[in-house]
Length: 256
Image 1: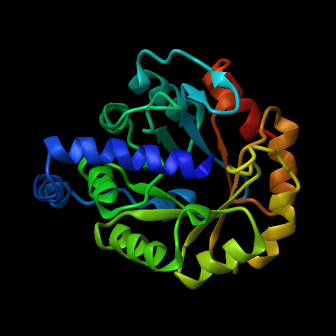
Image 2 (image 1 turned 90 degrees about the vertical axis):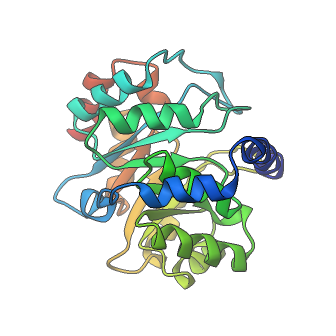
Image 3 (image 1 turned 30 degrees about the horizontal axis):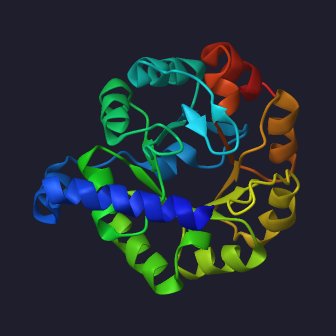
């Protein structure tokens, strides 16, 4: 499944590149003002922080929410106390677009994450051109040389990489590239099985000073508390927010 998601994302990027070449996207990325400081926004604090996600659907659950106005939803997330906004820009399985990210960027003062299956430099330039401050890199989807290349490019463009892992080996690879933000996804992107305790087993392998993000398997405040007790600085939440009252749910989760 992960291979299919990556190949689909690359095929879609190729179609966009045929319309808007790398030179144009690179120029647009470099013309952007400095990105927001995601490291400061997500830095460890005396309570858990939340990245709230704009997410219409997923391969595991299908359609989740219509979200006719991503900017409005993101503004509600900001009101509810989110520290950053994640925007799915993958269209085939998640129903997102770069236009969603651009709309969110214009509506909020928080760092914005491009969450997609990034596997080539063109997609990184696209992210910055659209206003992203963070870019997701999935270790399982990238050979180490490409992971190093993309991580370096993200930094050069003034953004921050959220490097996602799902095993001890992947955490080690993320540390080796100098990742300052490491996520542990409870969902195996090959099988879509969930293991909420995975974060706790891997957290100690993430060096002190690196921001630790727990991803997936959050439905209740108790789930947030579980991750916090295991050492999470930040929890990334999508489904539970788009299927309920975003402000009330965020307030409840932050109070956990």
